[in-house]
Length: 329
Image (cartoon, rainbow, N blue to C red):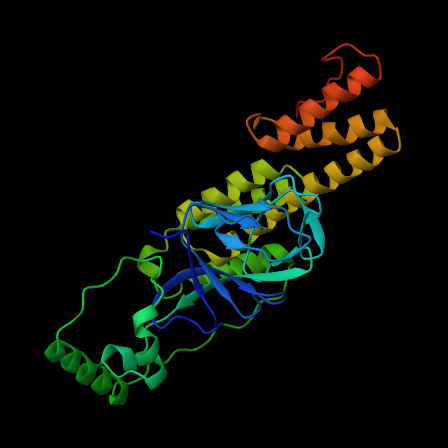
């Protein structure tokens, strides 16, 4: 399977499924869609890269996009001019839909789309342009469905039409409970949980609901205190209790982004301090990175920060390992 599928259009694919893509908004490849398929893709000027960046500001192997579960992570591969996401220079970032990537003067937009199956496709009716594009169709992340025979398609179509025109079924009636007075974020979250279980009261076990609310509250507290990994654990627990919960998913994405942004900011500060020969200040910034990643010593950013501290210790005439960064919380 190819790591990337390329189309000279921004149109959505016709086949239902989840798609991850980069849209080239400027430069020589403007108007091109790159559908991400592989687990690791390289962007740059070299011939063998997956996504060619035809820009004088690009390195041969400029950046990497790596897939972990259902997310793509963008990493700068030590490029000279750097990688910018939403006007901020980054070393690594979890991509979210709508992110704008800039390499040199070339701008890309990261996009995650969910193409739904419509009624016309169910009963076998296709638009003329869809028929023209059928040969070069992009395959989604889901498994391909086996083609249905013509009789079955017609039968499904008839049933769907009957369902749409059947309006005789009486609508349920019921009095709405009066809206309570707002009491801040806690009430907002509680209302969200109530509406979530409203249509499935039989499954709305109070214990599960309480655990879900507790996990989100703890996660928000840890996020405010910048205990990012603890917050991530709490939001992941919420998603285990209720998969695809919108609020938990949003807070999880927000926490990961906040962690990446703070780490990138500390690296930037440390480099500025080093360039200004303020080695002690640079060590403080690198220590901030180590404290943020405490317990995740295999993370490449932790390793880089530790190596930079050792170099600065040597410049200051200190013994190797003299700096003690980690804060035990």
